[in-house]
Image 1 (tube, rainbow, N blue to C red):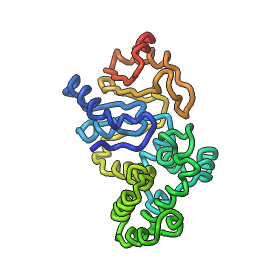
Image 2: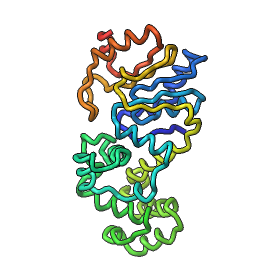
Image 3: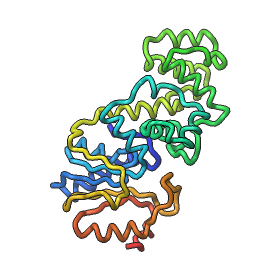
Image 4: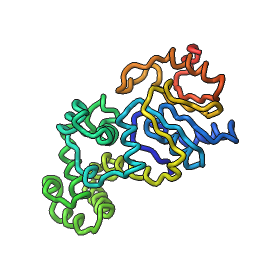
Length: 274
């Protein structure tokens, strides 16, 4: 099972392949510097395989979230509260008014495509439905769901003893009503929260260092394997702003004198920067 947080550009689906490739080429390797760790998928995969990891990302909010999940755990009373559009906008526009980890949480869980630049996760017309589903599943609160399904179905849901069984029953109701609105895969925020919580299973945290720096400011021991997943050329920019690809590839050329470097990039033409 891949462990990661929901994040734009996450390599969760590719984590096994990336690990296998790097491990095959470096069978004696034991230290990875993941300089654009983002959703933490690659760092987590290498840690589960016994490697020590230096994880870094420039997004201070996602780093704060990773630290919160790994070292403190997510406070249930806070993360199970539904974040509506107005609260989302206020958090994104005024992050200093909130704890850094919570800003990262909202960015990852309640933004469209895990990208706050693209806005709130739900459209205005679907938000009330998603909130109603969230409230009955998480809090057994039926006040909002009454506008969407009949009482007989509501009673079958709230008769279940816990969140997981209520969600399963809501899925059954969704099938009966021939709508996918309430199905598990369409309750995106709940799915993303659970993905975050699974990261708490990660062990050997003493072999992990986490930083919030520019990639070129991270201290990397000679011989450590470096993995980079920078913003791709000619694609959506990350919230941190523009990325100097020319400088990055020149930095890689210099760093390759002391470390092996593996880079994810979908545009083969960027090798011209080397």
